[in-house]
Length: 372
Image (cartoon, rainbow, N blue to C red; front, side, top):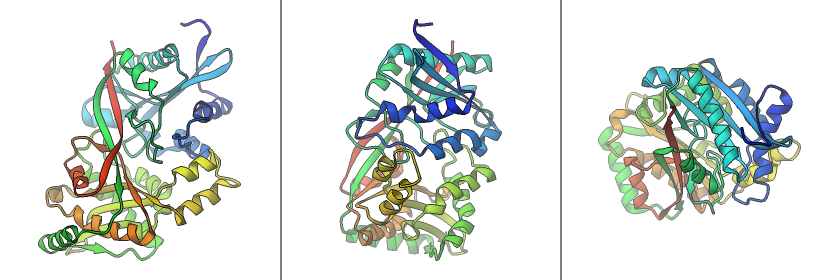
């Protein structure tokens, strides 16, 4: 133990509140940090359906009674069984600029993982890759999107000091919204005819909810071989529909179906909410909701959150069909920049951004280390 630093497991509602609110204190003077809503974080930590097959422990680091760090330890039993791993994950990892605080927090998760028979520690990673994961290692001068965490540059330095190694990197692109090129438009039309695929019209939110499970079934198949992904359970699908799809903007979503009406591809975008979340500062009421509603209707930026096609269509290029549709919708909304979700650096589908005015603005990393 380091004199003056105490590691305390979160047990009470007060300690959970401290755990959730610590990042706002840590990043209060950082213009690139986007705070999550307190209510959303509490719900995820206490009510997420993945807790049915995951074990979660949370700890705070205190110095003289003041919170100076936090970390979560998570064992996803379903993932470990499907992937034949013995892994404990770390997540919700934040600390002041002090390597000893980082070391003590990480050692706490390692010791807990070892006591549970785990042989490896990895992260940052929450319940699945449908949630925030990976640590920023480049692009610290860009505001983060709502689907990712921001961290200070000293974080990856501490990971190296603690003996972690890279497992995978994610890249995030910023794409300038320019007129749809004739080449992209022609290619989308040709691919639609060649593969007998068409856009499905989404008429209202009720249809969106009904189609949501089909949407996520496509995601389960299309993401099957993606790093850290395991198929969503029915309960997790309901969670995603309630938490994310329900606030979708209809003409910023795209469903592809085959000639039999079966879903084969999906894409979801949303006006960027990062500035609205900064103004809300963790609180939905009384004013946060107004900032969010304003951002949904008055925005120059859009986040591309989810895309995917069934495995048999991966190398067909049909994603160009929903790219064209969404591109045209971006122009109608007056968006100037589109921000991609985090994409694995070796993702072949990401090559499409070479056809646009796009640049890499962030690199995030998932780490791993053997538990001795």
